[in-house]
Length: 214
Image 1 (cartoon, rainbow, N blue to C red):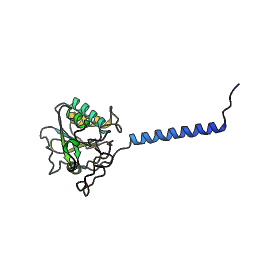
Image 2: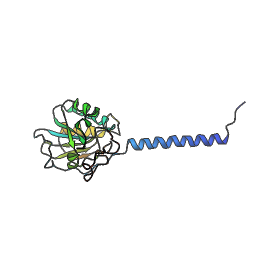
Image 3: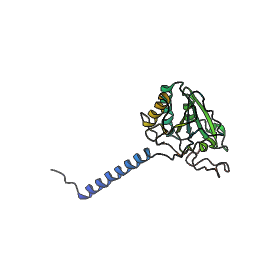
Image 4: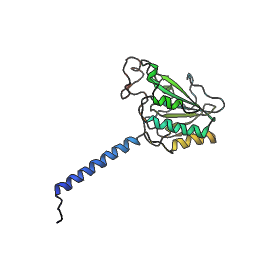
């Protein structure tokens, strides 16, 4: 005997499928929603403590030591360095509020970045350099020529925490190995670089940026 399905069961199944679909859509929207990206200096800014290499391109990545999305950015940076070898001077700057101890930045991400051959890892106290280069999202990358011309800014992952081949990585490798050209931009996928901090409150309290409690 064939068991009949009640209309109530059909309605419940429809609502369940709709809920699953909505959840999946939210997840995709989160994974592929680009972070905030300011307009960086078109030429190497004055006053920065980062040295512009006079004989090769200079790449800078800004990162938050507690951002899980940035692990994929570090992995992609490793791929970039493996293909570009000694053709680029590379710096990874980790944000640290001055009110926090230095070991706050020494996370697994710091160790991973420091393990990439050819990468110099540094602290960015209170996000001073991030503001100078208009970096707002963890994983943000800038590439400047040896003459200080901006060649690229954006992300080098295809989604939030998503590794693998992507437009940003291809652009950076192509610019480093093939020469200059017009500035290229891609979306950057990551958490807020400075969290809840801003220029007026960042150094006034002892609280960590929201979502990044140590």
